[in-house]
Image 1 (cartoon, one colour):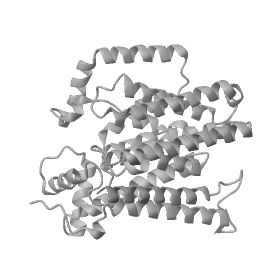
Image 2: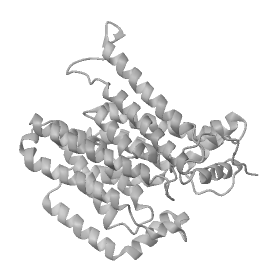
Image 3: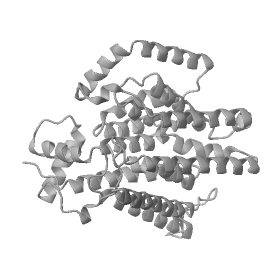
Image 4: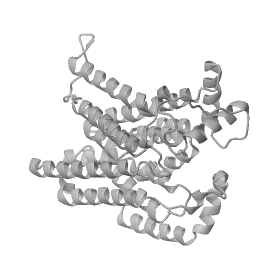
Length: 383
């Protein structure tokens, strides 16, 4: 088992290295450059699309071919069965309907197809968001892999589908295109209703906060923590399936909290170091939006740690780090300082990834050792 675990760690590292190198070769367009010329795609555009398609194919294959990987893989196979036969399930209508359609089309309970569809859609929205919103696709993708977010999509597939759409929808908030924003969040809510929380929160985070706003929010968070008993009862009304489960223990990952604190420290440093000059930048409002979301992520992880699986709530806010960190790096005018900050972030992320992989076998994660249904005869069957 230890050998299988080490082999799986090396396999995950290889996937990360190969795809990050491919992402590094994706060349951003120059100002005023178009993807088409004379009715044909430019060489740069064709190359970028080919590399992106290659990245998608590699990551999709690893996700779609997995078997019993993730802390809830088996649970999802049973839930899919119950949804298909009309049993009692707590999953949303989008998941239930998708399962019924896929099982009907395939002529049997091929849950592998369900995981493959979720993998494809989740990856599509993540990569699409990276391509159209990040100031540096390769840096964002590097963070996506080394912070473990890609590998975490093996767990709770409904939630990570909703998370990818939430990240994708941030652009509409920044563009003040609220109809499209709400439309995509409602689509995501068909698979995980917790995503509805981002409708008011993203909107609030899009405005400039004054100091008294932050102090008021801090005071409200302290009051919420003091009245956690009442809030917990309200949470169980919305999510009755959490009653009498280990999820009531709450709690968040200390590593995730430290990561959010580190990102906030980077944000504060940048605003003090170059904030006045950056205020004239067209992306200043965007950076402020991400910074305020990360402040909310820290508050959710600490003052609201008593809520069931509060980490999922914090991730809706903290996932903006994928855009925020490259934006800060690009905004540093002194190239020497920029290189030093980039090197520091690179080193921290590599260390974070190593720690993540060393702990990926633990209960509640279940990512090691990697198994594929291509080489397994076992299947989960239900009557």
